[in-house]
Length: 176
Image 1 (cartoon, rainbow, N blue to C red):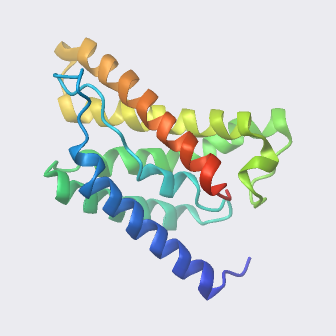
Image 2: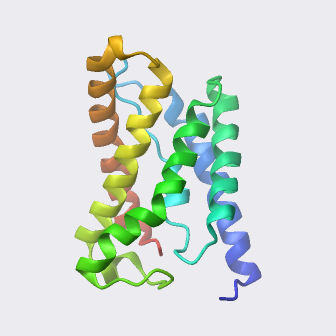
């Protein structure tokens, strides 16, 4: 698979814009009814989720590490974003393979997200985002004593993130 210079520039620009959006705008979003800040919105994982399926695994893991460490610097959270994003990047091909047999999707097949159907894309994204959110809050809190807080934060952030990502999918129709 040959990647053109335009695609590389487009991906670099997309990464830059989404990371900036995350650290400059979404970091400061606090819902008025959420005094304990259970709901956080994460948009930057969409970079890893919508990388082409044929992208090599080492490249995806290195990119996830670099993006995660960049976000960690702005959030002043030592390794929480990095660990969560790298785990999600590691799970990406397994999630794709998990959904493949039932739907007849071949790894390496690059097509518009809607050709798989919105339901498939929603399930694929949901699995990866849930894994990301759960890992994020387990690493952030890092004790079983606050298991209820971890679960509440994971569910609330998952719902908010999926809503925002659904808008992204509808507006930009990304390719996988």
